[in-house]
Length: 627
Picture 1: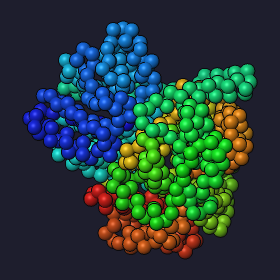
Picture 2: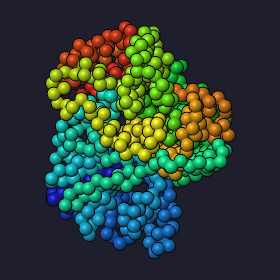
Picture 3: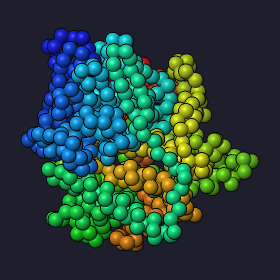
Picture 4: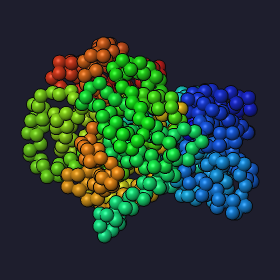
């Protein structure tokens, strides 16, 4: 796990080396063990390496056998030993036991076709020395990040935005359209970033740079059709059992200590079960607890830990710890990012890194196996007559406010908020923050004038959902979540939190063999009637206690609603009441004041809206940006 960066240039050698140094310093947290550079007339490549495999001989950049290709690589390819054996049979030699050296030699042998052989999480850059070409690729599901800027004079890339911003010729401007997307989605979706000039490389894509220009191409897609019909549920469960066991085993390769995140939910508990069977000593597991019982899952993590005999470790995420880590969180947040579970994930990563260097997690389970209640909500919504929607919205808004985690009134109000919209837009409203009506009600005229239109979200959904290959009702939202929520929220949260603490996190559920199998499973194998994750729960019953498998979904939320009335109240009031606040250039001050006032008086639960604004303001202040 590392940070990679580089640029194409005609600068003098010393200038290139100094720019690389500046870019690398911003990414040192991703790889504190080794800094490497490759500088020639047309290109400069850099790497900040976190040593996981072959600690002594794995330094990067690494050259291919013929010396024609050089690579910098972020991530892990788990099946690299199998590939290396095949290459050795073809006469290739290796000086290290690293996946990076395997990738560059596989590229020498197969070119871009090598991507299909790789099982893992990665972003890498390979420079073709003889042809003066640069190839940059990102893994199938976007587990590892890649940002880039391309203009007439140069191409620049980095694992994080801060690496690009360290380049002296990068002076980007904030995108009002990106802010508009963020305010609804709670993140800026790929290929966009918060800056007009900078892009994210999307999942399953690669870039080809040469002096003739830049090409962006998609190399990976999977399909929800046709369906794979087996004879019985038992056969599906047996197949899934084998796939997950194989995926976890493949992800145990490490020359440093390894552990597991354990929330006490089904996803992480199953990963912990398989991992515990692959180690000789008690597995170290890690959990975050909360003082507020409606958010706390630690008792379930303790149950699983005892059941599996792990060396379980837990830390309480309190309001005081939240305040302590906020400066670090704002600093690592290159873009505004309003998933509040970023905070406990950051603390969990910090806590875990004090004991191990690699951890496995259950991320991806909800998107792959259909765990979100929104999928059931879509089934219900299609039966609701349009004429009843105003009455449902009125009734939900009359419910008493409850600041507990996923309270009934919160779910009812979010559900009614999405009604009356097309399914793709409805899905984003259920998951996100501001809807278009709320934004148009509050935007200042000056901000409104900067927008290219009022249908940014509708346009991106139309563009990217056109790629979806389901053709089957609510399953289209699995694709939607894989494309947006997983790539730009869940995986970003884990990557930034873990890498800020120099911790590598591996996600076994995103093995492409599992994803492709579950996509082929009939929809009732994912969400049968009102039972989410039907097949995964059926598998879980073989290895885990019943009260772990069938307990209701809690999520990794934090008590933001209450904290805005207590620990964060002063900070919130200062931001909202300050006429010079950035958020008050986006929204009318009267509008933001009313949002805060109604929340503090507990007349409305505006936790999501206020947190989205709170994050935007703190991001802007920390990074000294001006719109």
